Every structure is written in C-alpha cells, then in structure tokens.
Image 1 (cartoon, one colour):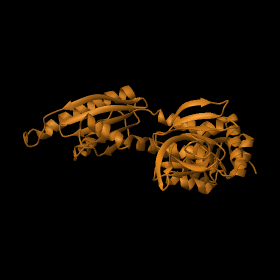
Image 2 (image 1 turned 90 degrees about the vertical axis):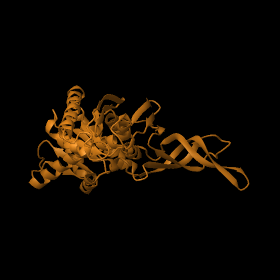
Image 3 (image 1 turned 60 degrees about the vertical axis):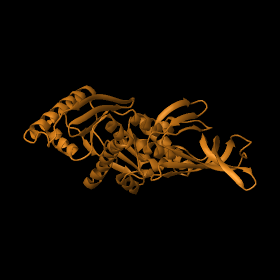
Image 4 (image 1 turned 45 degrees about the vertical axis):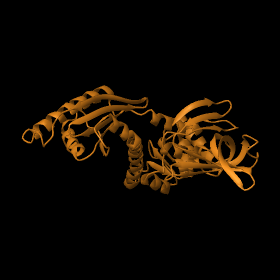
Length: 356
C-alpha cells in the first residue's frame, strides 16, 4: 500500500492499493461514518427501458464494508454524499468495489489517530520491501533481475549452447559450467542487495536441476521459491511478476513472522509460566501495569462494529506504546491468524508474571 497524500487536520488520507493484504488492512481501517471517495461505475437511465453503466467519481458516507478474499476486492456500501448530480441522486445508496491497483480517498471527519494509522503505515512499510532476486532459466539461457520497491532491474543474461542432442558427451560439464556462471552472478547480487528470497522460474525441469545445484553453492542461506514461466529470457522475468509470485513471497514472510509470535504465546501457555494475558480485560490490566513486552492484536478487533470497543482497543495500543511495548497486528488471512482469534483476538506477552 502507498500513502499518496495525508492531511491530518482534515482527517484525509489517499491510498493506492497494491496487493490483497492491503485490501484486508483497508477493510479493517474503514469504519461506519467515514467518507470514501473513489472511481466507480453506476447504471444510469438514458431513456425509457434503456440504461448504461457509466464511470464516475462518487463520495459515500460508509454504512458497511465487506472483504472478499477470493474475489480480491472490498465492497464499500453507503449513502452518496457527492457526485455528478445529473447522473445520481444525493442520498441514494451505492456500493463501490475497491480492487488491486485502485486509489481511494478516506475522510474521517473527527480526525485520524496514530493508532488508527498503524495498520496503514505497516502495510506501506511492507510495500517498501527488501529486494527479491528473480531468475528465469531454461536450458542454455538465464536472465537475472532484482525486484525492489522501486521496480525491476534486469541485471544480466547468460547464454550457452548446451544442447544434449548436439553435445551428448559434453552435456553434463557444459550444464555445470552454465549453472556455475549463473550462480556466480547470483552470489554477487546477494552480497550487493541482500535479498529476502530468490524466485527460480522457467519451463521444463532445468529450474529444478538448478535449484538443487544452487542450494549447495549459495553464499548466504535464503528461501528459494520455484515457479513456472515460459522462457529463460527477460520476458520470463516479467512473467514472474505478472503471476504475482513476489507478492506471495512477501505475504509468506509476514505469515512466518506472525506464526512465530502466536507460537511464542502457545509455548508460554504450555509452560504455565504466567507470562501471557489474553482477552480484553486481562490484557487491559497488564497494559495498565506497564508489564507488557509484546501486544498482539487481531486485525478483526480493529474493525469491531462496536465503536466503544474499537476505541478502547485503540487507546490500549496507544498506552502500550507509551510503556515501550512492541505492538503487532495479526492478520486472519492465514490459519494461524484464525487460530489466534480463539484467544479473544488480543494477547499480551509479559516481561514478568503479575500476581493476581
């Protein structure tokens, strides 16, 4: 997610949606009573018995928000407050569908607090990811690129004539030499860019053979993800991006981090060392005492339909930060995040046990 514009005085924020995690965060962020301005299509009557869909920009006062993971969109339903009056009736209802790549404006008339902005800032931080190394490879050709938050840079292309049909006796040594040249470039890029993962993609079985060779020769241990693309050319590298594999890598990184946090909670509970408080009331006590080391809050808690409960949670996050507690927002887009809800959606890992 990218924060395009932010005006704290007016409580206005303009956001660009990059991936499905951003949609989930946005569905938790937007609440009833917010004003949302975005491009949308609406059916308008042009003559008796005939209507067409027309693109326009509308501002809705939000009534409800729903997240559709498999449809990769959120639906924002509400009353139209601004729009082209020759096409719409102010005060009528409309639903805006927000999808990947869209830009929307959210206006919160009573202002935006730091705690409310935390999920948005975290999503923006994830967009500014550490680099991912992309390799498209097939027999005799490999293209290596580096994907950063600023875009893709094609770094090198390696070509060798290593056809098993033309050089059956020398095939194995030629393939090994080809792989060695590619790995030398990869290790150079690892030292230069410190990527979080490598995606190896291509047609056929060359990519699997290369991965087996790569695992033994990497200068630094990194996750290696296999994918299918149609060639080892530059077009193959761009195909990796179009397939959304880098987004999946970043999502998996977040899931891994959140899984480790929830497992830490489970470990303390199994040890019965009294270093965990869960449920809103128990966590509130622990935060008030200033003994919370890590505060884990489900994103579902931030879209609580009860405004008083939502406000209480936001104040709790603010108080925890004032005591220098680490605050983590846990997604429910993965099984461990759904499991976390069984703890009441809010858990504190304590610095030391508190007597009851």
